Image (cartoon, rainbow over all chains, first blue to last red):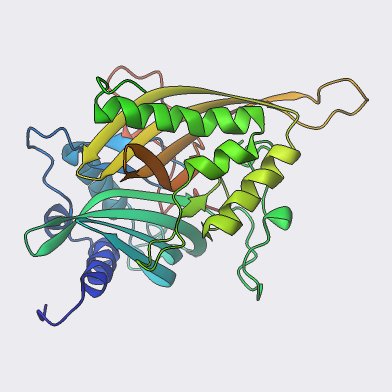
Length: 168
Length: 168
């Protein structure tokens, strides 16, 4: 990490590293990327995987990643629409995760069927010394996409909101 | 707002106010609750409704709420499992939204069928003077709940992660 990099660039690298750790199944890297929340300041990490309830605290969050990585033979994230905002020692990243993954093989030596998936994420980072650490990850499925619109998604035509059972 | 209140209490009040504004269909209150992101600092608000793509910027976010509120005859949020963490001028709230809502009436003067829905949210706030303003809201459907577990959700038994098509 060159000192010439801006905060915004460093945050984007940390964001990318989070997904690369999942791709590699690298639990050690994952542990280093997340904020150490064992201090007395009451700041706890949190994580919402698509469709999951909230997980809180390093132990629970890292365990969930270990389980996901253990049950995934192949996963690749193509990040698009990445936006970074830095405010003091906090940064907030929103992005679209275009996921290609394969489940456990049905026969030895073969990948399971590949599945494409569209997830949007809000990731929050805290500055710790020279590094940006993950404070919160929230990923959720996009139940109907209008990604190809020139004017961006039109809420009126988007998936149903809280009133329409999108969460059912 | 009494000055004797802690930051954490003030953040929780701001978080509650966000949901109360939706319940009342109060677009003016909604506009006051969200951060003014028109400054030159590049900080933009963002919002993910359950199942939706990312919305960015006050205009798009507030328009989405106006549309949701206009299409919802009745909605009530029972917030549970609310956790607040304050770090400097940023606060992060995670909570479960137990939603009861009614769609447009099929016959005049009657509510549409009531729908229950379980959503988890990560809400980020910025301190602006004495107030805490919403910087980011991300809500997502819980596709299978283990809310009644004494030891908290067990990831191994939770809904499928990125590998399992929870977002499909």
